[in-house]
Length: 494
Image (cartoon, rainbow, N blue to C red; front, side, top):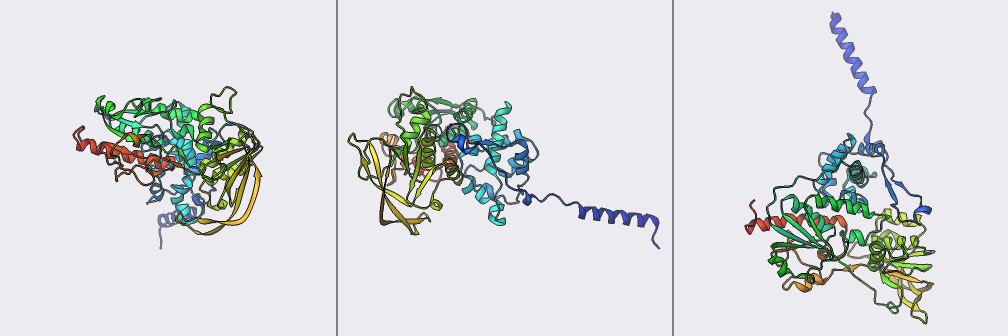
């Protein structure tokens, strides 16, 4: 016979078991992915205010709850700068938003920038467990990165990473784009005396001249750069290395190693009949004039651009999307993308393509320009397009466009060519013995070191046209390589 105490304990245990069965923890996988707050399409296509407006605290916390905190976080493997993604997301889930920002800045110099422009869908989010195993939408890593960075900035409680004791060794970065900014941050953390030389009058490289403010406001870039200044990095604009001063002079001034990230600012053209007509320009020139010099956005611009009613942008990448959406905002009634492949093969981010469609951009897929026709004054007025079909996949994995015998002719006032860029030739031209590839990119070894030992390189000058985050990955790798080199040469101690 059981004692009263035993029966009481059994009933209590039974009750606890029933309670455990009835109270189930919230299934993280049942939470729907957050949707970013956006400006209405019919309003934003007339202004340069940021399209994406961010997440509320409540939205960010709920999205963070979707993270499964995997034992083997494959999302980190997809991040070129190796952010500890689960760690910063769990900080957001715990409402420690400033702590999340600190985690991001352990490895990422520009979290507010990357949260806006990185192709997360091809990198960290493509490696999320939801995508790989559950076949569901991934955790919105990019949105959460932006949220944490914005929260810190708006709070006024901005931290900078720990800085090692200064070692007095002078190093220089050439160009002030994302690769150099990442390199400069890591070198400053290690105690180096860092100076960045920029040929243009604004710091930021392609972040400033290549990306419109409706995607990446200049105030965000300036804030991130100011954080680098607080870390001790010095910036010298209007300074063309090789012209303002040559490398030998800089070496005499004490610089012992250099990181070259001068970008790929040389635009490619198709070399078809009529391409030299007036009002046909590269996307690089168009976006630089508008983004950096205020062309068409002010009546007093020193470098204006002509904006007609019918504007065609040739290409299917992010630069093409930036250009055509900019043209729409500057008053084009018919703003068109002309691309020789289908929409599925477009390399542009899906979000940017969707935003363009919502804003009234016309897509002429499977069309390729073959000729431009000008009026008697030499201004472009018509464009001849050849219709294309899709063949077998090429080396990129995309189906190859195959010409057909069908042509159409359409009216155009302005044509903007966005079919890629080539490396800037200025630095290679003044560095004798620098080994170059057949694509005019600088060749580097595993630690981003060039054929000239004291010179390292990264970003578009090594890769050709690429993404912000891949350039930043190069910068971090080059910083680690340069530090090892300077230890080997005895400039600093390990």
